[in-house]
Amino acid sequence: MKKLIVFSLIGFAAQLVDGSLGMAYGVTSTSLLLLFGIAPAVASASVHMAEVVTTAASGISHLKFGNVDKTVVKKLVIPGSIGAFTGACFLSNLPGDLAKPYIAAFLFVLGIYVLSRFLFGDENRVKSDKKPPSRLLIPLGLVAGFADSTGGGGWGPLSTPILLSRNEMETRKVIGTVDTSEFAIAVSATLGFLISLGPENFHWPWMAALMAGGIIAAPIAAWLVRIIPSRLLGVLVGGLIIVTNAKTLLNTFGWIPVSWHASIYGFLYLVWAGSVALAVRKLIISRKRAFLSQ
Image (cartoon, rainbow, N blue to C red; front, side, top):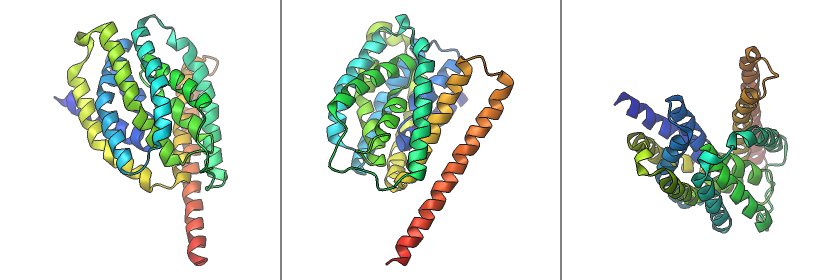
């Protein structure tokens, strides 16, 4: 019973982060299941089954708060679903870990770009007359969906920073759109796992606990996205991308001594915290100027 309560809390925390920053539910939940000795394919299958419910709750909440671009959702879900289903069916035969460090390196650099652009760039950067083109969204959906089912999480970590690095969408709509479209990816991946693994390999009690926590957190996260300024959201997302992918890089490439890892993590977290503090300071200054100019 204690373990189920812990998993409910993990589901709540993971969905709160995922729903407000556009990523981390799958990665957090899968990592926890792997720590308890669950096989990678079973862990990913269990998380995706839980995500069918949590992403539905998250999508409904984001739609209610106006955080979704429905046109972009439609362009993402079909290729994303194909990629997720394919990856789930062939997970046991795919060398997903071989590509993981290279994807992590790409996202680490992209995270630095996202953080610095939102921290130092113009807050009013959205080109309201444009949307991400299909030539970007189709391959992005395929790759992100495939990575999501093979790695237990990847839809948000790939889709959110790539869309944020462009100028076509508001930050809150990037997060809401990615979270809403993830429902179709979770359903497709789950169908693939049901076919390839069978329902007996799903860890149902743990899934129910993850679902319960995620359902409670979903509307709270969607509300936070609605009220948190874009500059601060962008810095939070950028920092999360950096620290999560730094862990993958440090664990993969052995040329950095293990004794240095804690110091590197500490430095990255300090940079992230300092960036958040600077973003808040800039927001306060801009609000004061706006107030005085009235």
